[in-house]
Image (cartoon, rainbow, N blue to C red; front, side, top):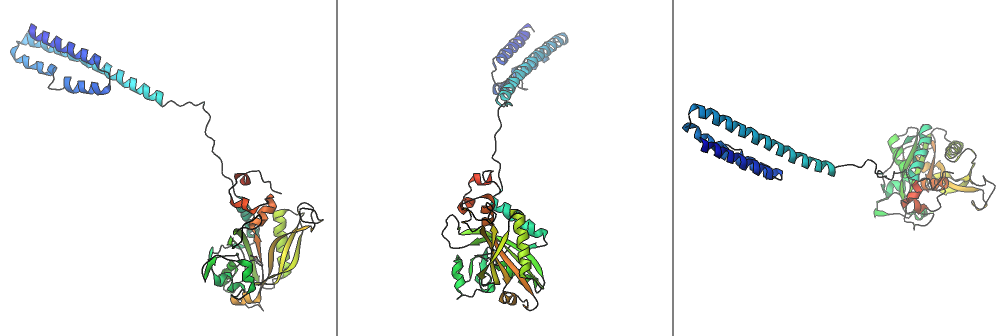
Length: 347
Ligand code: PHE
């Protein structure tokens, strides 16, 4: 019996010493597998029970239980010690310094072209116009033929184009949307504005870009006159540039309108008196317009004796440049962030 108790004490000492030396969670796991299993040295002590009398059994059982409790306690302490050590280490690593300054993201801004486009469309929508955007890749038929520009017409030279093949090109103006709308309306009266990108084989410089934006306007109905066109454009341009500005119509030529006009707006600086900004003319050219040519009406199934209409095409880039004082059209397309900030003030 004494021998057995000594063996128990030795095993207990060995286990407590080993536990004490455990340095990490892996070692603790190994310890559990080897020393706390059913086949461990401690568990194997139960083989002695059969040789002991009842009193001895009671004492031996009690001693084994005490040893187990002591080892369990030491094991638990070791486990907690290791767990909290690694937990604290992790917390320290994940610590957030709330006093550090945050990251400042640059906020995006709306391109002046988009602003001007929205503004103009809104003005016309409020006057009861529909909005329709034609395709960028347009047929020669809609871009030219239907706008009264046959293939041998000299006006084709005014609009050098990007062709994919002889019958398909990037649209050179928003006017083909006129023909597409008239086709869709099948002889009914209507009012529409058609925004869109235009492409011409121009060399880029301060006032020309191979890609630019226009808004086309078209009204078709009974008794539509040049006076209606003038009144509409005056309302539109005063809404964009301010009540003080005056407009002026000059005779011009477009194959798809008759008569055709060029529309000027009085200079922002001198209001029509003449200054260096408007080269002493007092006025700045802003858009092209006219009464829809009878041929265009006819090709779209409208009888010119019953129907008349007016059309205009305004360059969004041009309006944006005048409104925001942008002197080089290329700036608009080069993503210079100053353009989108308050650097350019509305005028
Ligand atoms: N399509 C013409 C251009 O791009 C503008 C225009 C439209 C003129 C409608 C008259 C009527 O120059």
